[in-house]
Image 1 (spheres, rainbow, N blue to C red):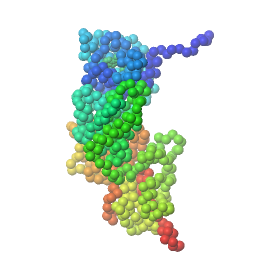
Image 2: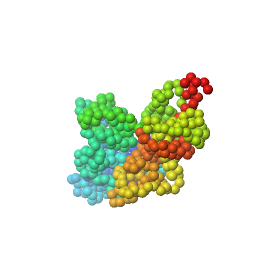
Image 3: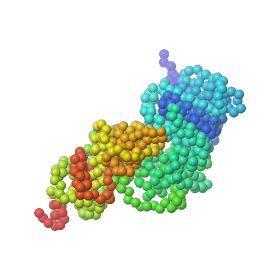
Image 4: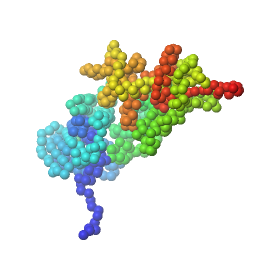
Length: 607
Ligand code: ADP
Ligand code: MG
């Protein structure tokens, strides 16, 4: 017999599991929710321990209000919250939580234990919950406040568990969230452990000192306070001096009424005043706090609550822009319109083959980092690669606009490599070489980049090469999250010829690759680490390639470097020993050719 009713209400535990999918994606989301709850409960000291990147267990202890017996029972019900009561409340949210979903969602996918005690209570309550099991609630002795322990996350949702990344990646997410929480709440002490290793323990302080405790003295000494106040918004916080700008966005933090938010458009409001002070692909360091009437923003846009809608987005953009501009001009940081070799030399970033899903098999893609434009190039048609406008202009300037630029293909290059005629250097930048039917022009920086790139790639694919031992080891300072990446890449660095030693308070470089220029060891490492951090997700498969390209770019001779005849010869010799001398690791051409008959044509000679 068929029942006429086919729609049924989902049992609670399934509904909770579905809701959990939105709220809890990874160990980091649990930590974020638990820390928010602790802050909402008025805690001024929060301890967080992540065991095995939170996959095994998460422990969060606060000294906040604690819960009564009735409240702790209710707290794990879905849509149970003490934070809003009416829909009017929803329009002016001042707490971090309000959806009443977090604890219920966690209880649907993990073992949850809560120990809690209110200030005036004789004893506390210990609640243990497991999906589909009877709750247990017992009196217990515990400190005032709340402890939450979450174990075996996703044990009953194997499909989701499978999607968790390596411990290193999951821990990095947690660490970013912990840094963010600590920055957003300097009036709360945060203690953060990775298993039994202390990551940081930062006391109650001003925002300035909080930044110092988390990022160190160098960063804290490079901060400019920002301030702007209007009837709509109060803006406070700090921006870092241009030299603190990084290749990744890791040093960028917005808080709206103490809630971390993400906004590309507001980030641009900070970036714009820095535009001529930092490289195009660098991101200024900032911590910007917005204080806005809760009635004028909607935080209920997303279950994870980090996206918000502003009523006066344009006004807020302008206020931030204004605050940053005035901080920079007060500090007399005059825009220096400097030509930055670095960006100009690598506007194109190679994307790993596996990232595009458009079926263009076997092709390499490049992204123009200045415009975001994606360029697909076929591996065997390197000559089709983009010539930057800069190059075009340079050559038009030299040879006139209609000159056809001939970029050698892979098969034409080896033909000319045998015998080089005389060579000379133009403006300490380009090398001109006479060849059988004209002249070849080589970009010295790009050429050296290609040479080091191929050497590095070979070194990475074979066993470790010998580096040059430093007389005095150079200590390198790494943030905890960079340290994780460093450890992951360490083997590769060693293959390149780096050697390291560990001592009580950090890591020192004891040996560097032969190609690297003295004094740049630290920079090269930092750069590779931060590029890796920024692009890892997109280019995980190309990480080797990526390290090699970064090495090449950092260590290569720059334009402006005058070369001796011998240096020029050996550079050109090494270039033609490369597998692909025609194109630099970033996709730019290295060599241009001009033919004699073209000169003849232009001089009106018929040969
Ligand atoms: P929300 O934070 O959105 O209200 P949660 O599921 O995170 O939803 O928490 C439910 C309720 O449990 C909260 O409203 C609060 O009353 C109580 N609660 C949760 N964590 C704590 C804590 N650490 N201290 C005190 N009360 C808490
Ligand atoms: Mg909450």
